[in-house]
Length: 280
Length: 183
Image (cartoon, rainbow over all chains, first blue to last red; front, side, top):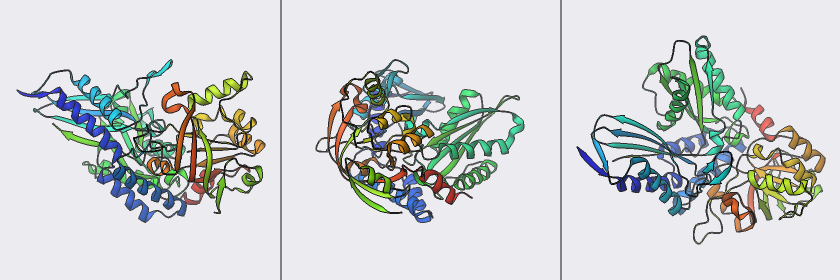
């Protein structure tokens, strides 16, 4: 059985927390550049120019793209033939978050008790979604997720009869009502099916796909492109100030559902759609 | 879309000229406050106590900056979503506040308070935090240090780029701008 020191996990998480917050991945950067070319509103174009200038400053000076450096969400796939030694997995991840957010001068945004308040002081704990898979590798997606876009996310326990039209209305209304709050142009993660909690989880997982990549299922690929067109017809535009670029992409993840249920969730990501991937 | 250069503190006649959609470059002194600081300020006003910052003619910027790296005036400092401050804002405007900088639309209670008190709401670009930090020359915590990123800071700004999002006449760039491009 392959072994991995927990300190290696810590180091990787620390580094990726910083990198994710300093530099956008190419898929997001290219998509924003394309949006700048195609945006029809002069104000929208000005906003996109600021966003692109900002991204250049952040990566050159190694400062956070956004002051909201997020809750650290981690989707991890742990191979069942990999043995972590020297400490527990969750402790190793949280130690990495603590180190990354401290060394990188990233904002610590985690309130320790949701009602009584207090700050944990080091941005821990991370939100960890752990999946046990075949093999002897550890794959991690690190997604610092801001509060503004998270607050505009929603879930609905629909009727199966609501079908595709129900999904379209849910997504388009959701993006329109979110207006400028989630920092458009957004990436829209849509979860369809599963249970209440699985649906919300896969709507966030949908944000991991490279922006603008095709859905492997042609049926959902078509629906994604249709939803993107509809969302961009809302007029919300960059920063909500009006324009033709409201979303960069719509991504759908699905899961089998109960015969009586039709859960649909929408998780929005801001234009600074930060994500990093590593395989250890 | 007009363009203005404004210096704080803001005067009523300057605010009345501003229309939703105008571009403004701000300079002078502004103060930061977000959720928890607002709650405390409003409590002080309600109990008749003295405030740690002046409100007359001033601008509050809704921001919780990232920690300041060595050699910089401030960490990345973009706006947070404004509607969360809406329950507190009318009382601050009644007590002399003239401007707010944030992102996203304000609700009716703030719109009414802005009309009655001649105040203006500016939008800065959410997420353009490294760019915005470049127009902040200095930053000093003046109250509520215990709140960390949410402490009240006094900022000296120069050519801070904003757009008039909602003016004192009821104009709203979110509504007007989005209507123009909705199909």
